[in-house]
Amino acid sequence: MTPQYPQKQRELHNHHFDSTIWNDFAFRDDDIIIASYAKSGTTWVQQILSQLIFDGEEGLPVAEMSPWLDLRVPPKDVKLPEVEKQTHRRFLKTHLPVDALVFSPQAKYIYIGRDGRDVVWSMYNHHTNANRLWYEALNDSPGRVGLPIEPPPDDITSYFDDWLAKDGHPFWPFWENVGSWWQIRELPNVLLIHFGQLKADMPGEIRRIAEFIGTPIDDAKWDAILEHCSFAYMKANATASVPLGGAFWDGGAETFVHKGTNGRWRDTLSAMASTAYERKAQSELGPECAEWLETGTLR
Image (cartoon, rainbow, N blue to C red; front, side, top):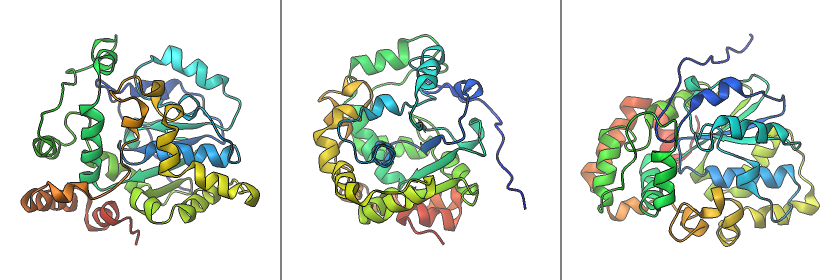
């Protein structure tokens, strides 16, 4: 049976997004698209792909090589020519749900999942450390659609409550993002991976990614690949992995590459709020997807 590939249904705009860039993007057959909601391990997977594609090479400018395509700054008339100039195998980043993308049957898509509570704790660090340049780029540059993004509250539990009640506020909807990728998980060019599984077995997950993208691993480079994909290495060399070298965050690139840990919410989030999240996950995603999002287990 011929696979049924998704078709673009809509555009998505806000302080971060301009999904129309995908309408003008010229795919190559070997392109790799790294997708996630946000704060789910995207930068980590970009680093992994750089290491697989470039055989463990050190010092790669990964953020420059692997841009977030649907981020509206810089605008698409600046970004697209730069991406088109790339001669290496391209690995690009998106935070869009499937129905706001132009989907290529030839490209490879890797979607990273992470428990939403861990996402929010990481996002809060990202947001609270954002500086004036970040707000100016997102709010004051031409082309913003909708309300500006505002500074977060002082209390992370209030931040979580708003995020859950308003579905991803103040960023973008969470459940539709996860659910849209879950629905196409059986397509031959889609791979679902999970932040928790990367933490538990990074070597095994890297080999799974390498097999999926069809890139053999040189055993002589394996130790270097593992070292360069470790959290300690990435934090120590964060400037190359983070957009604009971390200029948008107080504390620089090392603030963007924060703790890389799960479960920090357990010490702060009330049992009632955690249960509300779990019930929402079940109702929005269904039990199978909700279990995968929490644990990384695929059945």
